[in-house]
Length: 217
Image 1 (cartoon, rainbow, N blue to C red):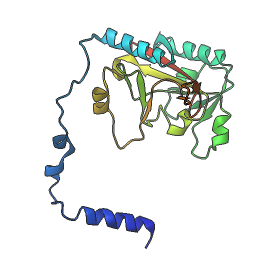
Image 2 (cartoon, rainbow, N blue to C red):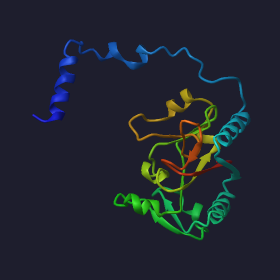
Image 3 (cartoon, rainbow, N blue to C red):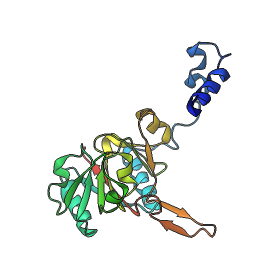
């Protein structure tokens, strides 16, 4: 018998006395939902302002543009980083990087960590952005690609569609997300602190996070 079989056997024995009545154990019934869904009464514009403020507080670089201005802005951001190679998820709109002066590297399952580390930048979309926490969430959708492509390269540019993807709070974000998908919650560039609270960025993810808030889409 394998270790896996042993563990699953223990789980089955532990659950043996629980009635086979799924309705009695629905998670939504077990957890009270009477907490605040958001803090304060904000307009859509104020919610976006709060998101930008909290992103900047986490040391992300925040940019704003319209949908028409996005390709030109992305080209400038990549040029400013002297990015010669850019990792591209399979579902990223092609026109976003049409003018970029860099080699576009597809998201391949066979790419090694060393190959990903050699890439200068990665550009993705997002699933949702949370204003109250300054967090962007990726769920592995085609415009975001595999989780690892946003954890290894040193520079991540994330595009947020303001109208459809910005919410006030975490509860509102959770309603939009599929818990079965590979969710990555990002609040600023990768960072950690030692015992003396000296902050070091780029330890286990991108050293630089740039968030583009796109209006009109």
